[in-house]
Structure formats: C-alpha cells, structure tokens
Length: 337
Image 1 (cartoon, helix red, strand yellow):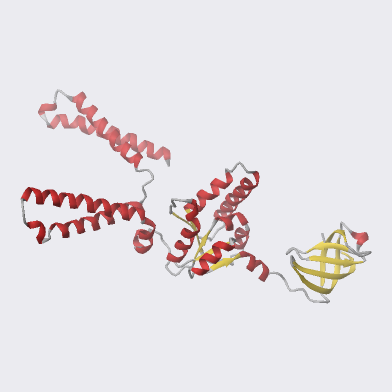
Image 2 (spheres, rainbow, N blue to C red):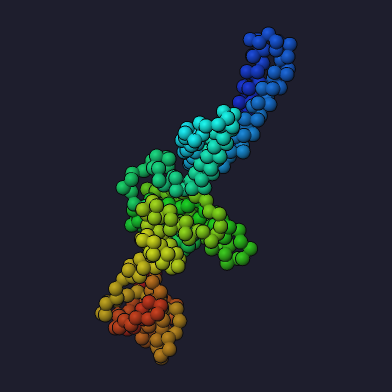
C-alpha cells in the first residue's frame, strides 16, 4: 500500500510538471520560460503532496464531520447576516460584520463537529460506511476481555453470534501494556495482542475496529460505556467496576466468569470420573487431583497411584470458595491417557 501511494505521488508531481510545460505552448508569454514553468509545476505538485501527508490521519469520518460543521456554521452565519438589524448603518461596516460572522460561525461549527465526531458518526448512520445488517447484535470488547484470553475459545465454538466492536483506543492501550517495562504487564499485553490475532484468524467472525479517540486515559471506561450505549451493543469485560458502571447506565454486559460457572458440569453422586492424581491428601491413603474447572477431588485409598490417571466413583460434593470439593472412592487405574 505504501509503495503504491509513493508511486501515485511521484506520478502526480511529474504530471504537474508536464502540464506546466504544456501550458507554454498555449501561452505565448511563457514560450521562453519553460524551465520556470516546469519548476512551478513541480512546486505545486510537491505542495499538494505535502498537504496530503499532513492530512494522513484525517479519515472519512472526520471529513464528514468537518463538512457538516462547515454547513451548519455557514447556515447560522447566513441567518445572522440577513437579520434586519444588520441592514442599518455603513455598508462597509455591515460587510465586515457579516464576514466576521461567517468566519466565526464556520470555525466554531467545524471545531464542535470534529470534537464530537464519534457522536456524529453514531447519530448519522450513513457516515459510518459499514456494510452490515442493522439487526446484527454487537458486542463492545474492552482490554481486560482481550487479556483474559477466553474470548477466542468462546468465538471458536461459535456460541457468540455477534459482531465484535474493538475501539481503536483499546488497541492503543493494549499496545502500551505490551511495551511496559514491567515484565508482568508486558506478558499480559502480549497475550492480549496474541488473542486479537487469534480472533482475526477465526473464520465467520465479524470484527470491526471502531475509530474513536480519548483525550485522557481516565476516560476509557466512560467512552466504552458510551459506545456500547450509542450502538445499542453489549459490553464484554472482566472488569467488575466497568461492569457496574455499564449496568448503572442501562448497558447489558457479558460476564465471562459467570459463563464459565454456568458451563461447569454438575457432578452426581455415584458417577464415575477420570482424574489425574498429583499430590497426597490430609488423611491416610488419600490423593488429590483437580477437575478442569479447578474443583479439587479427594480420592480415598489412592495414594500409591499418585502421578497416574485413575477412575473414581463420586461419594460426595461440597461447595467451596474455589468451586467444589469432590470426594470419591478409587475404582482402579485408568487405561486412557
């Protein structure tokens, strides 16, 4: 893409020089100034390319907001300029007042529109240029959900049938965490970036980057809630404080921890389970293992089989702070690896 743009810019500058050279054939006064004409053409082409580079970060959304602001400012200036109060007095003073009103109103309209370009983008649908159905459910993803990592596995199962909205400032925050000098933060940030790449590699998943800026880091949570509220989307996060803020604002939020708890299989007394024994228990002969959801399993008379996979029969289930504590009797060593 960069090479293509470079080629187009070089071609444009050369075209300006050739056009200036051809002008000398139509204007007799410039017939003997072809070198100067070519230099002027090169300068004009270079100036246009420099303006293009200065507008590098200016998007269609910003252009639409600027056009809207100029239009509203011009309309307000025209309404004020045609007021009967401005028809009395010196015509020159009236002209200067009208000119000042036009400049001031268009400036204020442009600045206000650019500052609220996110709201402008959400209020006027055709400015978004997003080819999707309006009935598609949307989910706004925050930084904590990407760092958590489980969103990729959930999307792989196709249980989450919604378009994922990832604001650009979330990507910026994630990049900043990945470049942190703190090794722990750096590892979390890199894991979030890896999860983002995994999401992009999943087929049949709709991921959209929402171009949105924030002035201060403290505004991230408020902006996430605003985007979800404006787009009538749900908020996917593992941050409890952000979830409470969203709930207060009437925004539904998806709790990955609650989903994990709901998907834990119900253990029934008398059911057989396969468990890997990893350490000794408190009582004589007991050995401990853990289920995939983190529940601890205490197997009686299994201490000699520590380090192996066994089959046990559940004889009791007790709730605990870490999930569940399961008591079982040893049935025998499992043959499945």
